[in-house]
Length: 176
Image (cartoon, rainbow, N blue to C red; front, side, top):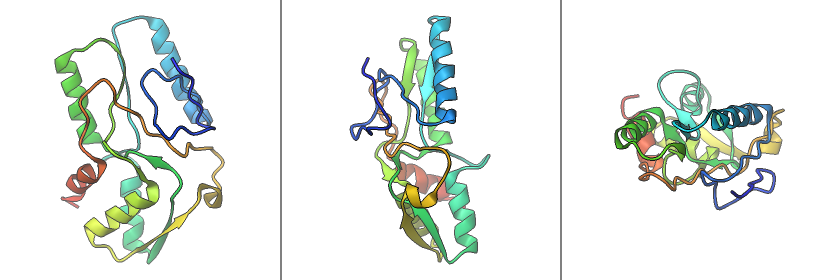
């Protein structure tokens, strides 16, 4: 198991076998939950995903849609990279995991490919034809109290790849 540090930032992504090294209280609480589950013993699937969005709850995609309808421009972080994953695609991947019943353990199930939040926002506005300019800003300019990893790609090394994030996003936005 290799120790990955979100401080030094891997640009290769993170495998299921990498040891988490969270940057924030939120990340530490997730890591604590994972650590506890691993002590319980065998017979579980621990599923990690990233940048999840869907119809319910607050999420980046819905926030961009709502703000882009109200404002002429939005500033969006351009130095945090991840894989935006539609909850529906994740649910289908989890269902297939349960049907296939592979060995228990940790699985990464995220969209294929990667993008900065800025690129995702640009894609949302373009697909929906919204009249809103997306402007880049750095994480430092955003000045949030919680640290966030600059590169949070989870490498799915154990399961078939999920479809690319732009394809997921287009399908999600089709009924907007």
